[in-house]
Image (tube, rainbow, N blue to C red; front, side, top):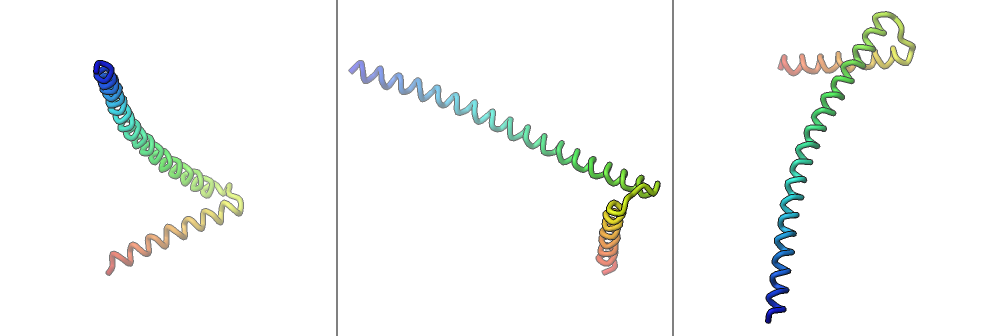
Length: 95
């Protein structure tokens, strides 16, 4: 009978240990999810900043006339996209 009680006690201790580890893992998971969200936000901000800086470089090259043909075509294509988007917005506003 004592062996049975001892086994039950060991099982209970192991169960308590597992529950504590489970809680610790859940807390760590929450912390990592929060950290991941923060990193994704920073990445998004940096990507937007990079895009903005690349556009500024293109504009500076265009203003100095230092663009080669492929850069000019890409720049004109981007300008065309902006103009179409502006026209679409104006059309939506005028409705």
